[in-house]
Length: 194
Picture 1 (cartoon, one colour):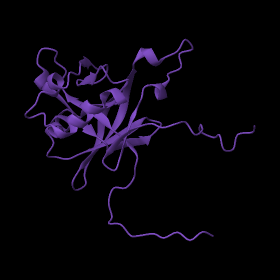
Picture 2: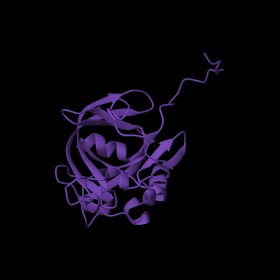
Picture 3: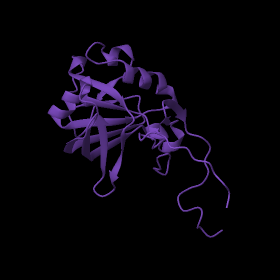
Picture 4: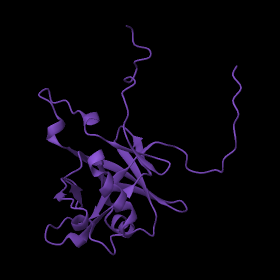
């Protein structure tokens, strides 16, 4: 058995990598972009497959927090290498001082099942309705039912297969953004008969 030296590290969030997503909220209004906003979130993930459920965790001090709390709706917009600067700035800037739609040149589009906009430049828009709110400390967790998913048609082939991994998805790990690396295998490959 190899000898491995370990050092204790302070308890904290070390579950990486995570998706870096843009969460849009508020009310879609093409004539008044101030009715909606978006922010960068890495504290997000899948809760359940059936029914499809996700979560986001948001600091109550964020400008978008009250929009999400009041409406009970949000959209998780997946990000790509082409959106890395907008993703970073959306997490640094506050929507109370900056109209992120205009400044970051992103396009709001209507969702199908929620009032808030989706981000057109995102390859995947996950429309969500809040089911439960848990105030946990620094963040409040919103668990939500996925009510619709929109995907960019450019990534759907002639057999109607969606090629998500061709979109250039972003990942976030310990303060750094990454693109996805080389493919190492597919689910179940280690036990599949050759």
